Image (cartoon, rainbow, N blue to C red; front, side, top):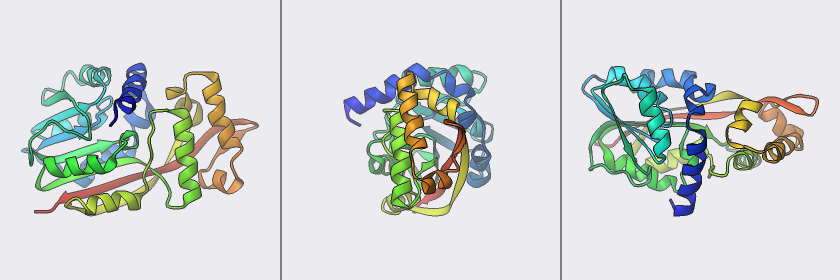
Length: 257
């Protein structure tokens, strides 16, 4: 990341750190259950959770593994996770850039990253680092908002995310994640796209702090073509937006042995 891009991420997540502990989008969801179902973690594993946020992935996996290292670029976010998970004694916390991880090669049995890579300016560097720190045969599970394959829908979802949150870089398409993984010694075992509903006010208010910013997002959605609003299942009440849906991608890959 450039210093400017890092500063945007750090500033935004420093302001909003505590809200991610209770945010329904982050604290709940079937994708947290999928972490255990898909990874099938083992009691002797050492696991890395990249961009841990409030620590919901770490909390989910901690009972199943030997050790878990939670990293984040934002110190306050990491401290929030550590406070939230103070009773979990096998979790360790480190400040780290997802694109430049401070670990030796072939250290981890598994790596996870959930609802974060859309903030990474260079996802190719992130995936290269994941491959580097994984042991041969190690598992990687990625969960993130993903853009539809259709260009118009891709442009729309990334535009509203950027309007809402200036630290948003880009939600990639599933095809792009598959491409990056396959070019970094990673074999995709399973992938799936699911739909997730966002309550508009909760979603927009988490990172858009002024009425003008929130109004810009609302207007962009309201003014969208009907086909776009239909795809994203935008529900309105008059000129107000109640909710909409977007795509969440789940990918499980293993490092080639």
